[in-house]
Amino acid sequence: MVQPTSPTPSTSDTPVPEPVAAAAAGRWPVILVSGAGILMTLDVTIVNVALPAIAEDLGARLAGLQWVVSAYTLAFAALLLAAGSVSDRIGRRRVFGAGVALFTLASAACATAPDVGTLIACRGVQGIGAAMVMATSLALLASAYAGSTRQTAIGVYSGLSGAAAALGPLVGGGLVDGLGWRWIFLINLPVGAVVVLGTWLRLPDDSTSVAGRGRLDLAGVLLAIVGLFALNYAVIKGPDKGWADPVVVGTLTGGAVLVVAFVLVEMARPRIALLDLRLFRIPSFSGAILASLFARITSFGLLPFLILWLQGMLGNSPFRTGVKMLALTIPILVVAPLSGLVLRVLTPGQAIGLGFAVAGVGTLTMLPVDADSSWTVMLPGFVLLGISGGLSFPPLMGVAVGVVPAERAGMASGATNMFFPLGTSIGVAAGGALLTARVGDELGGDVLVRGGVPEGAVDQVRDGVVSGRFEPLSEHPAALDSAREAFTAGLAQVCLLMSVLAFAAAVLCTWLIRDGDRHEPHEAKAG
Image (cartoon, rainbow, N blue to C red):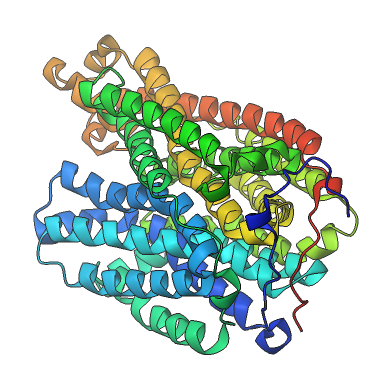
C-alpha cells in the first residue's frame, strides 16, 4: 500500500526485513508479551491499596508513601522513548528480556525492603525494567504477526494489560488482607521467572537483523530522559505542592527547555535520531500519539476519583472496590480480543473514534451521582468505559507500529507508550484541580463550623474530603452531609470534563488516523 505522507528514509535507514521465525513462534510471543504486560500494568495500581499497611510496617510518612508510587511512574515515563529506540539498534528481544529480569529482581528487593528508602529506590528500578518491557512489547508483536493475526494478538495484549490495571485494587486488597503487603511484590517472582525463561527459549532472536542500524543518539537519550522526568515530576507534584511552588515551577520550566533542546537535536541529526520527527508527517502516527494521550487522560485520569468515591465516601474495602470494578474490567476482556473482527467492519480510525465516543457517553451517564447515590449509579458508566477500552486500545496499539517502517517499530512503540503516563498525570492533575475547587466552593469554613467542626480544623477536614477521608466527620452529621454533597458535585464535574475530552478525541482520531497510511510489513506471518 502506498504511503505518500511518510518520510523517506535515508540510504542507511533502508528498511531491513525482520528475520523473525513467526511460524515457529506460534502463540508464544503473545503469551509472553501479555504476561509481562500484566505484571507491569498491575504494578501501577496494586501498590496504592497497600500504602496504609506499608506505612504501618515501615513507619513511613505521607511524603515517603507518595514517593513509593512516584518513583516507579517517573522512572517508567522517563525511559520509555529511550528504551524503544535503543531496542531498534540492539534487538527488541534483548531489551525486553533484560527488562523483565530487572523488574523481577527489583520486585524481590521491594518485598524484602527493610525501610521506606530502600523500597523507594527499588520501585525506581522496577520502573526502569517496566519501561524496557513496555517500550518493546508492541514492536515484538508487530514483528511476530501480520494482518488480522497481528491485530488479534495486540487486542489480547491490550485487553489483558488494561484489565490488569483495573484489577489492581481487587488483587492488591486480597493479597494485603490475606498475606501481607510484601506479597504484592512476591507474586511477581514466579511469573517474571517464567517470562524471562520463555523469552530466551521461545522468542525469535532479532539481534542480527538490527546490526548496523547506526550509532546511538546519546545526546537525545540524555535530553529525553531528563526532560521527560522533569515534566512528569512537575505534573505529578503540582497538585500536591501547588503550581506556584518553586520546585514545581523550576522542573516544569526546565523540562520544557530540555524538550525544546531535544527537538532541535533530533532535527539536526535525523539519521541517528532517538525519535525521528519525520514520523509526525504521517497523520495516523500523530493521531496515535494524540489518542494515547487522551486515552489515559479520560480513563486512568478518572479512575483514582472513582476509587476515592467507592472507598472513601461509600466505605468499601479495597477488595470490595475491586469486585465492583469488575463491571469495567470484564467488558475490556470480552471486547479487546475481538478487535480483529471489529477491524473487518471499521477502519482503525473509526474503531478508535467509536471507542472514545462510547467513553464520552459512559462518563455522561455518571453525571447524576449525588450524596445519596449507591455505587450502581455508576454501573452503566463502568460497563461503557470497559467497552470503550476494548474498542480503542487494540487498534491504537496497532496503528502506532503499523504506519511506520519496520526498523522504526521500537521507536514508535516507545513514543506511543511515552504519552500514557503523561496522560495519566495530566488527567489526575486536571481532575484534582476541578474537585478541589468545587469542594472549596461548596464546603466553606462557615458550613463546616455550623456543622460542628472546630474552626482550627476546617482546612485539614476540607483537604481530607478531597482525598476521600470522611471519617473525621463521622461525629458531625450535618457537616458530613455537606461534605458528601460537595465531593459528589466535584466528581460530577470531573466526569463532565472527561466526557468533553473523550468526544473531542473521537473527532480528532477519526479525522487523523487513515487506512491509507498503513505501512506494508516486512515480517512473515505468524503461524
